[in-house]
Length: 280
Image (cartoon, rainbow, N blue to C red; front, side, top):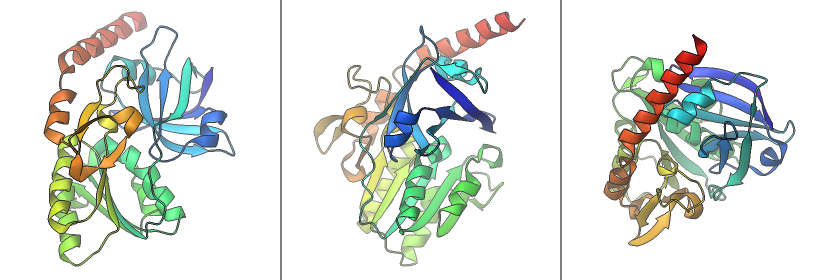
């Protein structure tokens, strides 16, 4: 069993947990993920490793409450235990040799972008972090990004915090000003990554995207994270989750990601109703 050492809320729909999982902490690298089960009858879900400390044996996960399993996960408290916590899985992000990188994160995708920015900073890379949220209430990991960024730019759609606009607006300003990056690494909603890639193509800047948002099973068996990369079929969980953004068919991926929306919403509503009955 894997004890929840610490739990806190980052915004109304996003929580952070620190889990005692020494074997995972020993090997976990940025870009990799774990698979957990809340209880013995629970669904298996993949979540990215937000941080791993081999000295303490602690692994940090950050999740958005969007479905039945993340709702059930969020009902647990410090001192409770998870049934399963397996990993690290997936391929680590390839960061060696990079000297200057723009890390572009959007929404809860910043939980995946942060460990990459942190690792690059520790390796001596110049890191320009551009993060975007719909409004100030949804901002997460601001202090953490600032601590590992040579330059930090915060965007909000409504201008309630930082600069008003999209992450692509900020990135284009930097590119137009002459900033030259070895890579742009972007992680967030599929539509955001699609437009980041459309922008960087114009400047011929290599761009890596994380297709973690479309993963379901985490082993390649369900086929839910199947996507087309460079005209070939790939699976985000076993072939990635990082891919060359210029080669990803985002339109296909976005269409696939919406297949189970109705079922997921129904399961979430049922879990909420069951929890309310148990409480009362």
